[in-house]
Image (cartoon, rainbow, N blue to C red):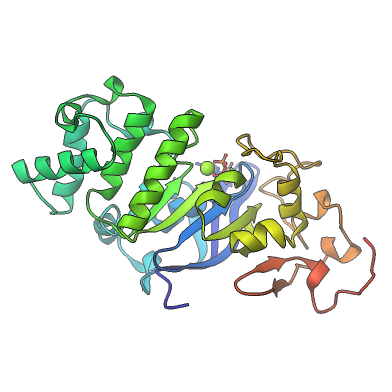
Length: 330
Ligand SMILES: Nc1ncnc2c1ncn2[C@@H]1O[C@H](COP(=O)(O)OP(=O)(O)OP(=O)(O)O)[C@@H](O)[C@H]1O
Ligand SMILES: [Mg+2]
C-alpha cells in the first residue's frame, strides 16, 4: 500500500463522567489508502462517531483524546492548533452527518451556506461563488438549483437537505470525506439515492471516503475495506469478501447471523445475546468475552492477539493466536 492518506494509531478517547472515565475509544489503529471507501461498522455506542469526530478534532467536550496519533498525509493532526485545524476542516477533510436539519442553519438560505464554505476557504466569492454553488447543486441532482439556492432549509425535503450537506462538504474540494450515518435518517428509497450519489462523487472526484454506519448491508454495497468495531476497538478488519465470507471474529459472525438473508439490515444491530459492559468498566482480556459463543478461559484474563490472515484481513481473537490449542473447546 502506498502511504496512507489517513493513519490512526492507538487512538484513545475518553469522557469524564460521575461514574469515572468513559472509554469511548480504547486504542484504535487503521490506515486508509487514497481513493478507498473505508467502512466503519458496529453496534450503537461502539465509538464510530467519536472516532470520526476525533479525526477532525471535534470530540465534544468534556470528551478528549487521551492517547494515540492521527496523521493526515503524514501530518500529525493532534499537534495542530485549533486555527490550523479550522483551515483543514472542510478544505481538506470534510464531514457529513446524519441529521441535515440539525446541521443546517435555519436562518440562512441553503445557497448562502454553500457559498459561505467557499468564502471561508477562499475558493470563490461573489457571483463566481454563486455560480459554482448552483453548478454543484445541479451536479448533486437538485432540481432547478437556481431556485433552490434561495430557499431556507425547512422548505426542502430531508433528501434535498442531505444533498445540500453534500454540496457543503464538496464546496471546498476536500480529498477526504467522513460520512457518519449520512443516509440513516432518510427513508429507504432516498437513502439509496444519496448512497449512489456519494459513491458517484467519490469515483468522479477520486475522493477518499470513511463511511460510518451500523448497517452491514450498506458496507457490503459500497466499501473497499471494512473495520468492525466493538466497545471502542477494532475486532476485525479486511476487504468485504474476507469480512462477509471468511469471517474470523465471533462478534462479526454474530452481526452477520443477524442480517436477514436477502435483505439489507437497517435496524440497530443489538441482536447478539448478552449486554455490552459499561463504557466505564476496566476491561481485562477481550471485551466481547461476556457475549461470545466461543469464549475460552484465557479470553477474560488476557488481551487477544492481533492475528493477520490473507491480504489486509486481521482479527483480534484468541481463537487464532500462536498459543491457540488445536481442538481446544470453549
Ligand atoms: N458527548 C458525550 N458525552 C458523554 N459520552 C459520550 C458523548 N458522545 C459519545 N459518548 C459515549 O461514547 C461512546 C461512543 O459513542 P459514539 O457516539 O461514538 O457511538 P456510535 O458508535 O457512533 O453509536 P451510534 O451507532 O448510536 O451512532 C458511547 O458510550 C457514548 O455514550
Ligand atoms: Mg454515531
